Length: 154
Image (cartoon, rainbow, N blue to C red):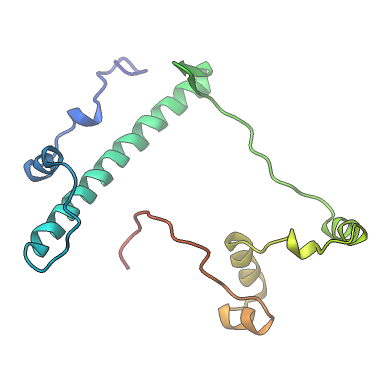
């Protein structure tokens, strides 16, 4: 039963199409992408992706349910793991004064002050600049790595 007295449905209890279930039984998708069976392997990858989206949706709903319970009743401990609200922090203050003190230590403040994606987007909105204008002002976007995640098709 869940927190509301309803029957708990685990991801493995959720309905999944036959092909996706068969994929689980088979194990991992073969990584050899030779021309023969390439279409079948792509179909298996799509089925695996569909299964991941399905499980993530279930997980999101379950986390929201637990979050509401914890909000009302306090933390939940399972073995050596606890689910609870923990504070998150950010830094605010007089950045010019901090930059001056950093320079006094013989350091370059710009080694510590980075323009992240959120800040860059905010700056471009407030100034009306686009990416090209940012480049003209000496700031450009670089790829700092790759993340594996799903996103909406454009």
